[in-house]
Length: 139
Image (cartoon, rainbow, N blue to C red; front, side, top):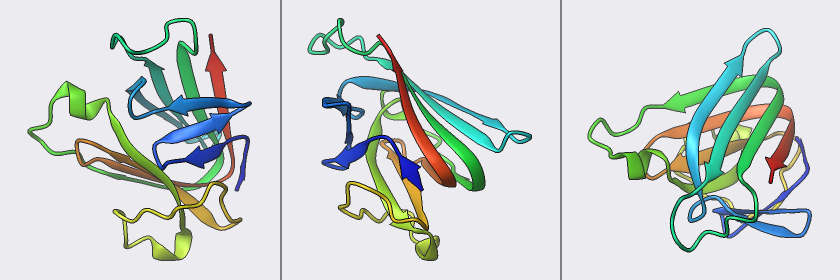
């Protein structure tokens, strides 16, 4: 997998010298899956919490290209919006370990055959294998 960012602290991304804290500073909006294009886009917006810098990134997109594996594990049915919109951790995981969806691997860049695993506070898991993963932002 080719990526244009590093994972730091398993909840933040380093992108063009910026620390992008997905856990504390962004709210997850959802994802779109384009089957014909084999593309999955996860979308976040700048959080409205008082500690978040309004002059930084307003919207963030993680664009998974040439997707050949997508798995979504359902969220807790009693979860709140705060849990639904909050990423807990993000990690690259070997695709050979697809039966383990609560594992955290401390590595900043993926190996060629790794999946990316998103673990949300509401228990939802999104696991994707793709050829390329692009972080795109708007200010």
